[in-house]
Length: 187
Image 1: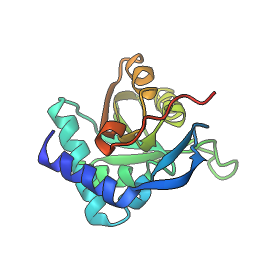
Image 2: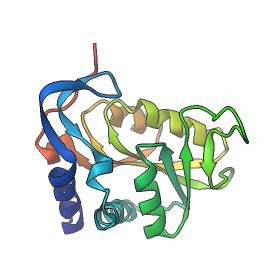
Image 3: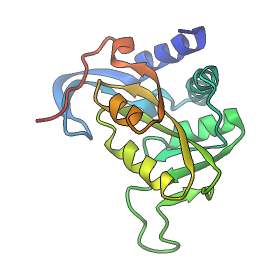
């Protein structure tokens, strides 16, 4: 693990990790007393820049090349912009559903399609549900998802689902790095 990645993990621990008295329900439906708020951890641009640079560096070390970055809104928004700024590339956001008015698009920001090499990002991931929907939306445009990266992976559920699709997966930090219990699938 490089020093930049260690610094990014310390930012997540110090600014985004909260141990709660009572468990709360996560977006996945699972319960946890450990809440990781990626948006709070990266709310200062210096912190966003550090974690974004750590993700880009980690991907470059794995020979990942991308020309556009995006992910499910709202969790991926800050990371998307941070990484696009570091990489000097285009960005997009994937809505949960089309807006229902205006252009009625599912993907906002840069138009993507055939020949685009996309990095999909998310702040915290447990089961990968919203992230995999974003991957499908991007693939439906004809673009290629070259990698998925997350700020934090809270368990062991999402990795095989991503890698079984033939996509490189790079979490900046895992539950092990943060010293928290893994989140299991909800019953």
